[in-house]
Length: 239
Ligand SMILES: C[S@@+](CC[C@H](N)C(=O)[O-])C[C@H]1O[C@@H](n2cnc3c(N)ncnc32)[C@H](O)[C@@H]1O
Image (cartoon, rainbow, N blue to C red; front, side, top):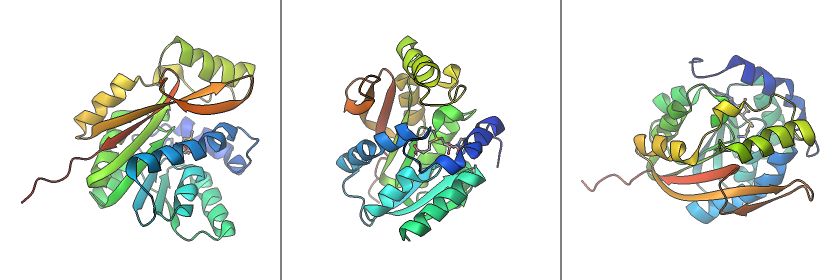
């Protein structure tokens, strides 16, 4: 099912696919925030060891592989073929067998494997799709009752525009111009509404702040630019 995907977005990531694992490339921000988001996921959901995880929009596998290193059994899915090949090769070279990659839409995977996973992660992806609410629903469908779903994205306001587009793409050139489209940014209130509509209970939020002078990120309570939310799928009622 390719309908909830923007071919231009997928082409953009495919074009850069060979750079996924270069920590000084356009993917530097993802490499920098990775230990922080991994830490937050484990802080919320508990140790990943032995858990079944789906990483939706996994790209080159920066987060998927890190979760597998923590002992999770990870399935990374994306619709950009070249990114998946890079992800696969990197895991192989690193000798990590606990991660698998598949080219499949989140909605199709949810229809195939409903309520099968302990944790679903969907990071920095919702702002690249035509219908993010449908992805939120698919993530909810993938997770078991009592399981966890994590999203991260960019807020939509003047500061986010300034930091994520003007600053990152045009002034600092951390990302190629055109990486992000302001209109697709998502307010926390919107993401919380979509989560609740998908029968997910939001239980936590965290901001990721960036200092352009020191080129450092840190976790904070400030959701004004980049932020994450943690949700739980309510446990099934006792029979
Ligand atoms: C900014 S990258 C984030 C990668 C990874 N989640 C991370 O945070 O390290 C966005 C990813 O979303 C993927 N993507 C875009 N549209 C998609 C769709 N409709 N279905 C699945 N993946 C998609 C892109 O191919 C790309 O790998």
